[in-house]
Length: 422
Image 1 (cartoon, helix red, strand yellow):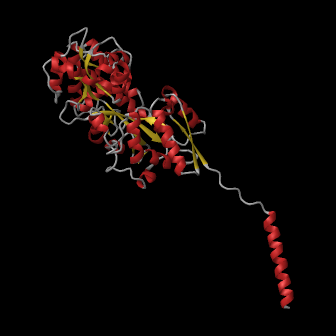
Image 2 (image 1 turned 90 degrees about the horizontal axis):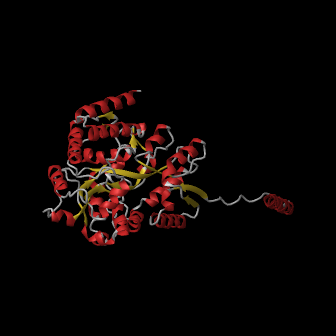
Image 3 (image 1 turned 60 degrees about the vertical axis):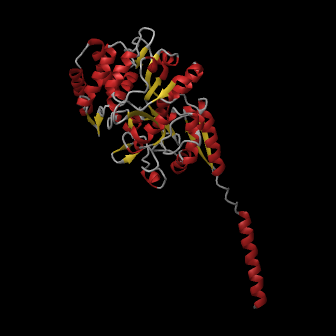
């Protein structure tokens, strides 16, 4: 019986082995491929950082591949809306606080609350703007800020000194006076902003810088506040400068930016990229260029953000957030600043020695860390650019038709309220 049992075991073992041999082994899991379109893949400097961080991510995560590719900035939002609407969304998309409303309105974005709660993105590590509208809507977070575009005074120190100023003003009254004293029209202007009719988004952005710095905004928690007294006061000051002739009028933004780096404009409220423009356009002027906080007591600074978001129907949301978290980590944010000169939303992200080499950048970083306020009307992002156009149209009437500021803003308030109601 023992011999028979042994033979039987041998036969059964052989049969089992034969059966296993006849069953194909499961194929090893294929790497997940993330599709990540961004205009940064096509821009000098920005492209260098994107390619470097993506390679490092794939080296650390061999089971994830990243297919990063360039989509032009101007066509980006429309193309993403088309792809997502057709049911073939990428895994990670690159948006701004100026256009995220279109995606939220169409319920196209994935809430990231659970992911962020498990990450190190917190109020201790990130810009306050990360935790405000338009990234947070109805208690949910729909994006992670990638970089911050703060608008602070970039000024020509030589022009100010020639007018008797040893330092930049720290209040709006003195700034208005300085802008007048540094104007020698038509060859030199004390200040420049987008006041040429027909460019409503740029006009809105430049006026909003004054409104936000003055403590106001055009909406709070979704409630229109266009005719808030602080807004009226700020726009009245802007109108005073306009009437005083301290701004070039019939020129576009590209032209007056060029005038600035040519030494023909004393002060701009603009972004950190302007130093790169100046270096390329007129290297000799770099020694004269300085930055300062917004000349209001609170230093509130209008900010536009670029951000990462995950489509609601993204194929690989877990891996997508893993990539976002990697790109926004302390190590790679320092790399981003060093390579691109962009302002990071992550606190304490300046590379060693960076401020010593670029002292002008300190103002931008401080504004991001402490003072940044989204340039979009808080809570009205779902209405896209319609609100911006209403406001900018009334500003043009104030500037060119001498409409009383309070009257024009009251009319704009009524129009925005009607838009929201309907």
